[in-house]
Image 1: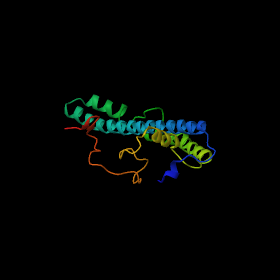
Image 2 (image 1 turned 60 degrees about the vertical axis):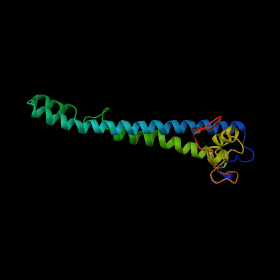
Image 3 (image 1 turned 180 degrees about the vertical axis):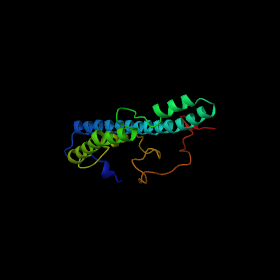
Length: 161
């Protein structure tokens, strides 16, 4: 994206940029929560399939009653009344996540001309070191002049080694 895509539109206040940044940060946190929800879904499914192995092993060890208890009480059991984990993920997406994404997108569109991450772009600009090849405002920026000594192994006193 060019610099214009992350430049604050005329008339957008500091307060608006900060508020949209906070809204986007909250959405990013929700994205992480959603990832954990998918992890919960996958881990619970993996545990359910491992129960099949436990049932087989209990039977092989001569514990038919325990094998049958595990099979009937745990294999395929709802994690909350009436729901498997995929249904929880779908309900979360439908009830909360999609509404959150839509509202955040609409706020950025209406309040900042569709330009996302303004808060972060301005923070980057304020924190970067001018004329340093690893602090350019964007990839391919004309100020970027690669130097052989600009690796991540540099120390304040010069190249590490």
